[in-house]
Each structure stands twice: as structure tokens, then as C-alpha cells.
Image (cartoon, rainbow, N blue to C red; front, side, top):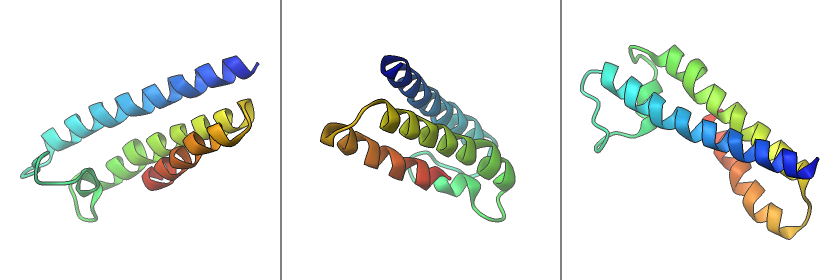
Length: 98
């Protein structure tokens, strides 16, 4: 069971990373004046942006929830200090997206 949870956790992280890559590319392409070099990813969902609600609730929120789910699965699959070194940054990453 623990190996299955670890595998699912890794798959969720991979899915979240793919969502971030594809979402950033797509939303930056539909936003006028956005530069992937000069601007940050959070500017895609800024208040008043053309797709702000879609970015917030259809992009950032699902990515954060996937990362939190991966954190929860990883935390319950293993114990010890080693997993804490991985799980705490994972939790922080999910919090940032949510």
C-alpha cells in the first residue's frame, strides 16, 4: 500500500508540473503584453486580468490541490525525517498555488 501511495504521489506531482507548464504557456499566449522573461506566473491571474478568474480557479487552485493531495499521500505512506525534508516544501508549494 505504501508503494502505491508513493507512486500516486509522484504521478500527481508530475501531473501538477505538466499543468503548470501547459497552463503557463497557454495563458501567457492569450494575455496581451505578457512576457515569460519579464513577468511572473502570478501576473497571469492578477485582479483585472482578462482571464483572472479562470487562472485562479481553473489553473492555480487545481495545481495547489493536486500538490496538497500528493503531500498527504506521501506523508501517510512513509514516516521519518527524510520524508519531512521532502513533504514540508511540497506542502509550501501547494499552499502557494492555493
